Length: 198
Ligand SMILES: [Zn+2]
Ligand SMILES: [Zn+2]
Image (cartoon, rainbow, N blue to C red; front, side, top):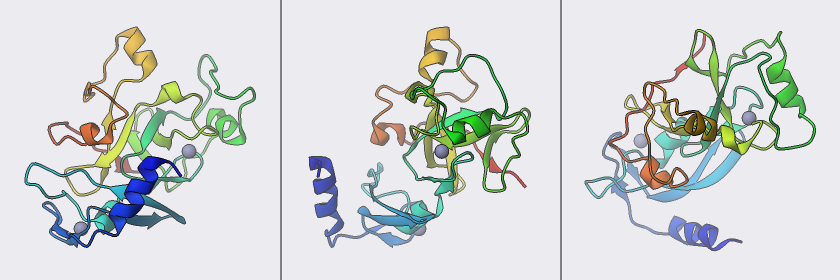
C-alpha cells in the first residue's frame, strides 16, 4: 500500500465531523464514497471557513459515468473531452486501439443516455483518463469537480497539445500543478457547467 493510501485509511477513522458549508450536512473530511459499483476513499480539501464545501454523500452523488467506457468518474478525477466519430491523427498509449477507443472513433457512434455533454454542437463528451479509454494521458482536458449548482462540472485545464499550440478555451483556467486536486478545487476557479443529454 502506498503511503498516501495508508494516510487516507487512517483519516477515515477520525471521529471529527464538519458541517459542510454548501450543502449543510454533517460529514467527515475523509471517507468512502460508492457509485456505479466502485468505492473510493476521498479526502476533501478544507475551504476558507475551515470546513468542507460538501458532505461525502453529496460528493458521491456528483459521480458520473464515462461517456465511452461507463466507468465511474468521481469528483477530483481527471477527464478527457472527445467528440464521437473519426478524427485526425491517432495517438495511442497502447500499440493497438482498445474496443472502447475504436467505438469512440466509429462514425455511427450513438451517444448513450448516461453521457455528460461538455458542449452540444458538435457533441463533446466527458470521458475518463483510463488507459483503455483515453488515447493518451496527454489528452487530460480537466477535472471533474463540484459545480456551483451542487452538481459535478468540468473544470477545464489545457491539454498538453493545447499548451503546445497556444490555444485556450473560453472558460479554461491555468493552474500551477494540475495534478494537485486541492489546488484544482480552489474556489476562485470558474467551472464550465456541463449538462446531461436527454
Ligand atoms: Zn451534503
Ligand atoms: Zn472511460
